[in-house]
Length: 83
Image (cartoon, rainbow, N blue to C red; front, side):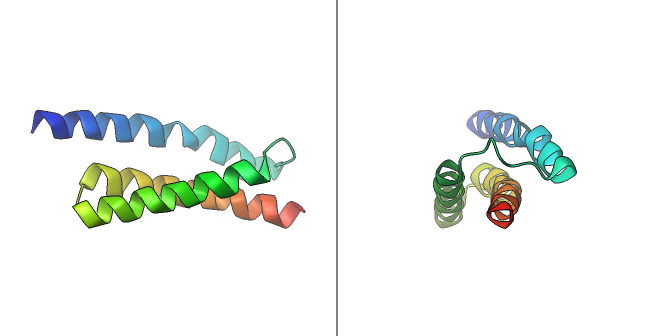
């Protein structure tokens, strides 16, 4: 059980770190300084982490990567619309 707490804490912190950027990007619609290649690779990586979490039934991975995927995907869509 204590190991799960570490997982949830890490999941919370890494996921929460995306909220300010996502909020700012949605509010300003400015994605010029964001690398398209980095966000494509990052979003794909998050999707794979989510799949891995589902396969091993790890709730910290499923929860955090679901939220992060939505936020990263939102930024990626805004970046693609800007092009």
